[in-house]
Length: 124
Image (cartoon, rainbow, N blue to C red; front, top):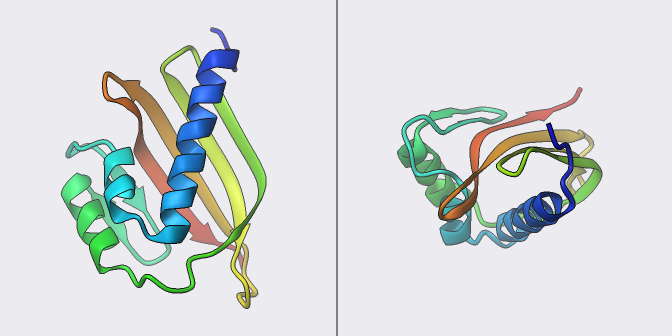
């Protein structure tokens, strides 16, 4: 198993950064694009459990577009082979006392790197 192949790691890091930029700017089209369009895609959030791309897209469309800026810490992106990877990070939002945690499982498909499973939680 080739862990952190430099080319795959650079590609996944760029995809994660694109996701993060879309998240803080509420670019719903890019967020929808980066989650695999399939019924098997899941996202567990702080107050929601979403199964399938349609539920995830509906959540994104209804999400408030304010207060999205955040600071990331302890980000770890790892690739396994050329087509699988994970992204883990902690985040804080200005004025929010709690630390958030985000994890994503990414897979490379013909259309590019896509999130197939994601989890968001708050500490404390």
